[in-house]
Image (cartoon, rainbow, N blue to C red; front, side):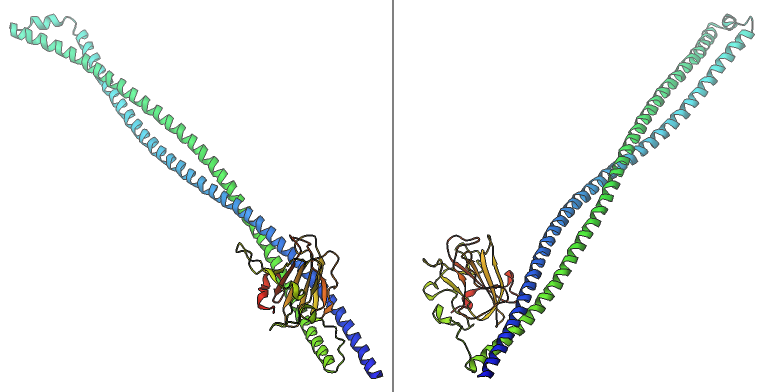
Length: 411
């Protein structure tokens, strides 16, 4: 008898130590999951900032490209203006040469005329009348007169023609010089605009570099946070492996106790009708309320990710653990799941029970629970419309993304 009592005491101490260790684990995992969630929120926020920076960068790069196109257009126009200015310079040079030649011709012709006049003056008594009177005949007289008249007239006409050419060339030269001035002014204006565009382009290009650097820094932050999450996941997996090992040890001890006839009959699977599935699960509510009212999908086709037990009169009914395990989380929220419990089972599956009545949770983190043990009462807390039990089955590591269809695990 003393040996039996001693064994029971030792067993109780082991269970207490195990519960304490599991409670420490659960708290640690909860903290790690909270840290991971916080990190994920930071990643989302940083990625949003990065997207905003990328959008601004893309817009700025587009503006730089537009400025490049404008600069190219102005440079092309400046190049055309340079060609036109060069052509104008050539034409001005040609006009200057022509004007110089005309001036030379005019000066020569004027000089010849002046020399002729001087010669006639120096001849003294010789006059047009002498020339005419010295003619041998009337025909000769008329011819001499005509020749003298023609020579004088030709001299005057040639001078007029040269003067007219000079005037025409001078006017053309003035027009060319005016055109050149306009081209030079237009070139200077376009060079100024091109310079301003180049300055704007350089500023925006520098801004793009700054944005690229900011983008790199944001990405580095994201990578660092993801690296932290990898480390957190590794810790969670290590904790879960240790928990699984302890759960298995506890299962073996429980089995040994049953074989030795020392079971205290704490299991109350009959509370839900005693029906067990191939996965070892019972219904989480009394059999009278075990009808599922909402399945894996909502009526509109969206994934529900759980099943609901919401038969009339279910409010306040007991909620049972569907299998032996350890409470990983027991929390009371005003939103989302409301009052909810998560249990990790010996087979590595997790179950979640949500929307329990306020103040009805009967278990705590790290506590070992038996199949059929009441953990809370059905309620309507959190994001709920009408009393019901929201029930989920998850695979390891028990996160939201690991939800499975409960139909595959229930009786």
